[in-house]
Each structure stands twice: as C-alpha cells, then as structure tokens.
Amino acid sequence: GLASLARGGAGGGYNAPASARKAEQPIDFYGYEPSPFSKVVRERLCELGLAHNWYTTPRGSPTRQMMWDKTGTFQAPYIEDPNTGVKMFESTQIIEYLNETYA
Image (cartoon, rainbow, N blue to C red; front, side, top):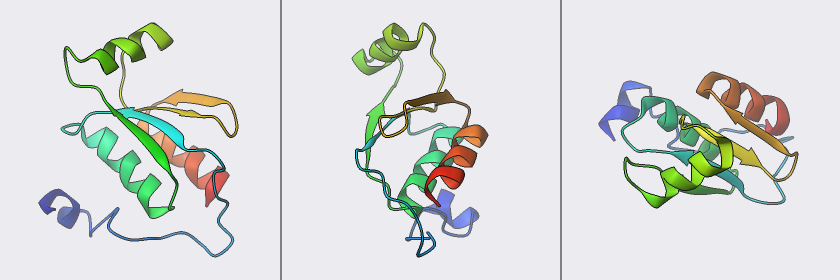
C-alpha cells in the first residue's frame, strides 16, 4: 500500500476510458513482487480492468524456469497476449502497448 501511495495510488482503481477495449482472453503476465518494473505493469493491467494470469517468478521457482524455457532468457516483467499474439519484455514498452491496444 505504501508503495502505491508514493505513486498517487496507482493501480488502486479502474482508470480506463469508456471506449476501452477488453481482452477476450486473459493476458499472461510474468513478474515478481519486489520488482518495481513488474509492479507498474500490474498496476496498469488492473487500472484497465484487464483480466490477467499472474505468474510469480522468484529465484529458484518452477515458474521462472518455465519462463526461461519459453523465452531462452529471464527478464521480468514479461507478457504474452493471446488476443494479439504479442510477446514482450520491458515495462515501459509493455505499458505503452497496453495503452495503445486497450485504453
């Protein structure tokens, strides 16, 4: 809560325009709680009201290995959008993509 407070309550409420597009299928989101880069992406997913599957990827976890097997690397955050076929890393690019595609 304190981390969101420092960013003006980001992610705490629905913040999408009336014309916002909905995702037909949930977006797969890979990240881990301590990462500030993962946090801002998850906040934007919540603000846009986008259903998403959140895969936590702490060190040594099976989900981190699953992500490594899929992508050949580990970098968080990472999304796979089954609605558009987009797969991408980098929080700023992900947020830009979400805004352009769904906001």
